[in-house]
Image (cartoon, rainbow, N blue to C red; front, side, top):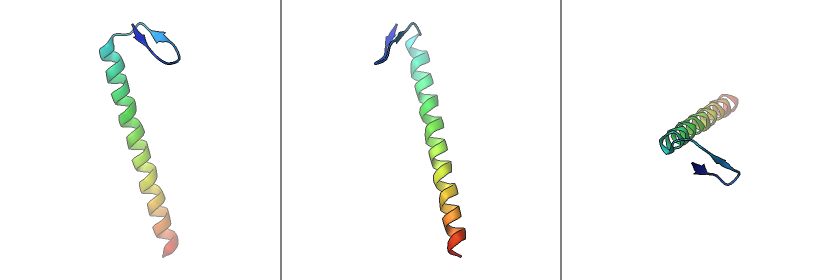
Length: 47
């Protein structure tokens, strides 16, 4: 059982750790892609 701030779940700890790692990876990837796209747009508008 894993206790969260907003509740608890009966999942194995390894699934919670892997799920958190995947979620963090996806969030970092999306943030990186968003920053790259915004930089490309700003470069195009300057030229």
